[in-house]
Length: 85
Image (tube, rainbow, N blue to C red; front, side, top):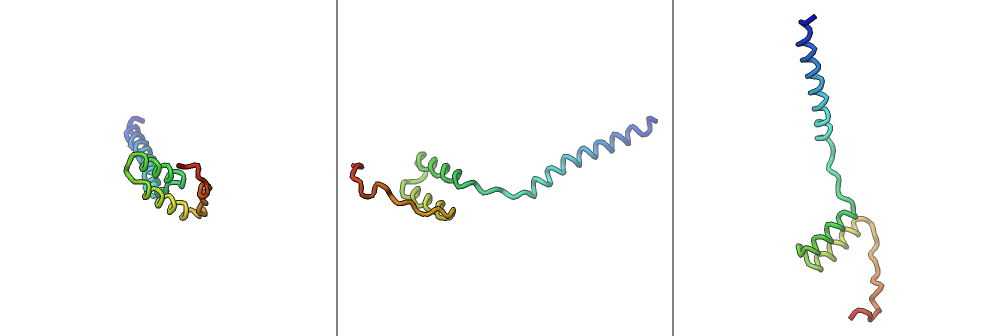
């Protein structure tokens, strides 16, 4: 009866190790997900606020992100307004 104890322990240890490695193998096969459009815009805004990019780069990149997402360009509602000054 005691002769089987080391064998059972080895078998159980191997099973646990393989179960743990199974998750790693599956994890390595998963694809990296692209950030959402919202996350890209948030990151872009943070880059502008931190000074990493200027306003012109912000506007160009934001337009490109929205265009790639299929969002039509927004008309500037303040185009004829003189409230900015």
